[in-house]
Image (cartoon, rainbow, N blue to C red; front, side, top):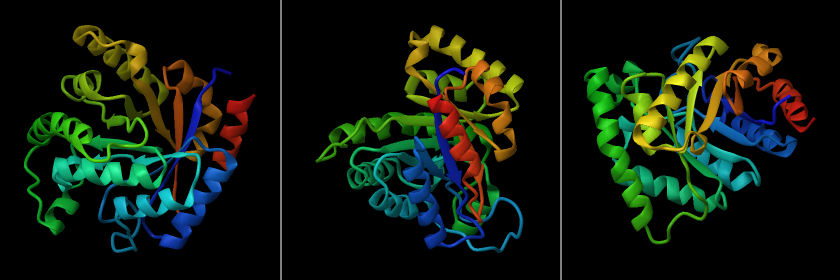
Length: 253
């Protein structure tokens, strides 16, 4: 099997902060390479009124209670925070984590978040335009903060838009995330390679991550063949990390 990394996305809905932190610590101890939450204000499935927690405050707590895995939001909604503030929040968590933070970001899509928290939803092209505007601001602020980040603080962009999102990945990102099935991921991966060539970016400079369901662990080889180098298992409370452990073991073999 091709060498790869393993991550887990812990869904911060229908759960508690203690459960999230316990799962993060367990994943860290079993050797997961990355731990993620999502950046929403309400559940994305199941009971729409279930408990839910904000991403960046949870990530700060995880940063203080883990020691080896990288941490981040898969992915941050660009609309919810001023880009300079987002850079500062990310830098601060990076210090708490000892240099293990990744700034995952996307243009946003979940309309309920916008409506209930008073953000303008606008249009998908408008949100992408805002992301393109804000990415240079984020990178500039990261370089001006005192102190600067401890670690490399890579930027990951999530999304599958062939004309704009993947171009932004090639221009600004250190990593990219999308979803399956493997055939879809392979096609998008090829488009990203083409964008890297067009903008003069080394294809290997962009890490390729994919979010998968626990029942797709047996399909890991197909995702690796499709171009993924980092497989991230999505899970909800009760956080069953058996699939993560199985992939960690497979990655070591």
